[in-house]
Amino acid sequence: MTDLSTATDHVDYEGFEIHVVPATLPGSDTRYTYTGYVCHPGVNPALPGHAVPFHADGEESFASLDEATHEAIHIGKSIIDGTHPDLSVLSLVTHGF
Image (cartoon, rainbow, N blue to C red; front, top):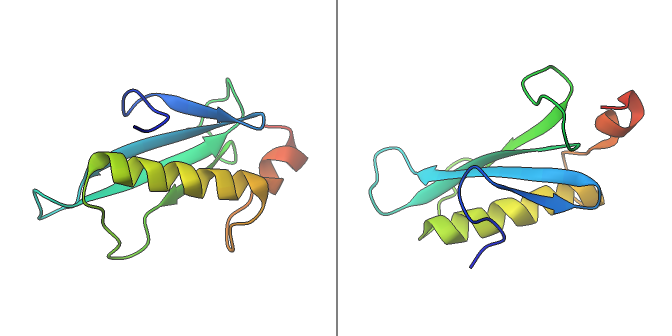
């Protein structure tokens, strides 16, 4: 089981929120992918600079919604921890969002 009870819930982690939306891969009924974002609690992620969006890379897909959600949470945590090779929450911290 994942840390999320529904696709619209979020995971609180180290003072941030990780929001994930798993979905079926376009053109497939049996493979799944995800999109998500990291933000501070209570911000409007639709405003520029208030969230760090992320998604599954290229053709990456998963066997279940749960597997896609688990991977997305892992990616969100790596962004917050500073271990993701390309994405960071530094802009959220330095701008106060």
